[in-house]
Image (cartoon, rainbow, N blue to C red):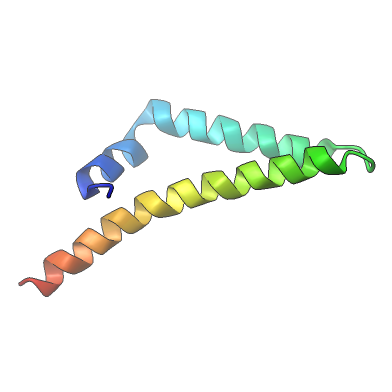
Length: 74
């Protein structure tokens, strides 16, 4: 389980965010600029973009879930 503070640190860390944005940009470019017959290349880029989104969602969920638990315990 990812702790709220760890998730917040990653989402605020400039190096992590730059790497994340760079990876997203690269995969979007692969997806958008692939040739019609490069199906496998597009599918891989799409899968990587979905994985990046899921990582971000997991981190965000860790924060909001802890916030929710904190409010319920009051």
